[in-house]
Length: 164
Image (cartoon, rainbow, N blue to C red; front, side, top):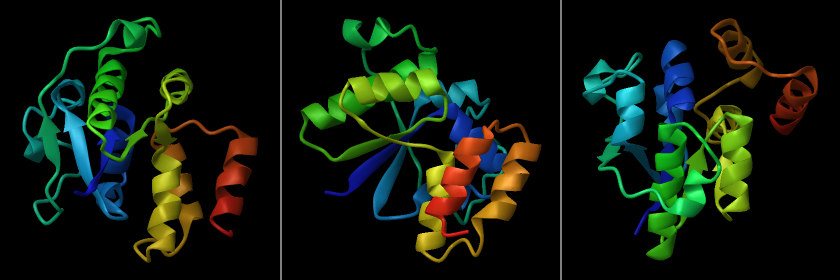
């Protein structure tokens, strides 16, 4: 059974803006997007996602699941709450799951729930490690131009992790 990568809106939007949605698929993971998240990005169908290309591997759109009360207490947006709820349902079934979240509050909440968390920048690094990305810095620069905020310390950490 393949492990799963459950993606929130921000990584979809940012990677779509730089035409690198292919980076969602680095590694051996099935990519899952909750229906609520797809609605948030205006992609009522996958083909409506900015940057979506029919040559990409299949992306699984998952029906929403009930959000447990202990997830609601974090007061996240609906997409983040659904990413966490879906991840918890998969882990309860014994599946290996990671969530892709960029917002600090969502990342902290996911970690508090014991979930594995990565962000858009980690996908760039994984892409470099897997050979889909030659250099992380130009993509990071483009992401920042398109609206991703990174502090200077985090930017340095990302580039160090990418050996750049």
